[in-house]
Length: 264
Image 1 (cartoon, rainbow, N blue to C red):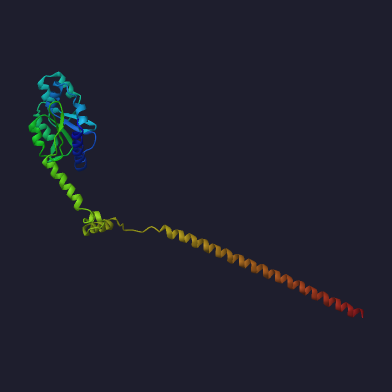
Image 2: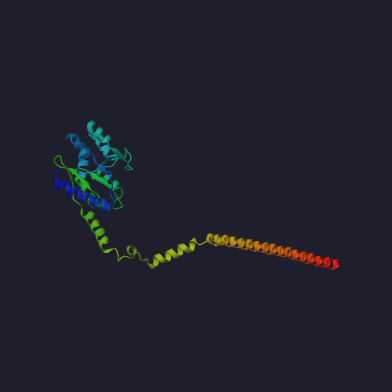
């Protein structure tokens, strides 16, 4: 694949990735005709899909497309179709519909490509119908070359709207500016009122810690008071002892004076 074509395909895939949230490995939905043509021309279908999408792929085929391959009675094409993952389309094998109706019902879900399929088909009518659905990459084989169609008008309109929304939103939008709307504030107040529980409140852990500190202070004050009382009592006892010694000295002096008088 040429460099210019690879670059254009890469740009298209970036649009699908950013706008429509496509992710690797890409789910590629195949129809019966592209499987049959690739087997007839000995074309490596999986390798071509990887080279065109420039990523890992996950080829898938519906039950109705397999029924269409069984009708061709080409064993090699049937074996090639059996190698791919089977996509359940909700149609019973006995009541199988045409590949066009089956692929359209699988891809187009309420006007959107809900499961983000990349459709590889040779049927022109299928591609014409899927161009009306935004976000559907379309592939087909032309002269043994896998080609990706450019963005359809529906996909281009959706991508342009999103880009304009990104430009005009931002600080002008209160959601992106960090400013709450009145509706959001009312909803937050209602949710806060609902969350409030009626009943006894639990004690604040910080207040409990403060109480512990006050208890320690009270204990320390009580201990200091007890120590002060003990010291006062010990001082009083010591004073009494000193007083008793002084009285004894006075008694001794008085006795010695009496003895001196008697001797005289």
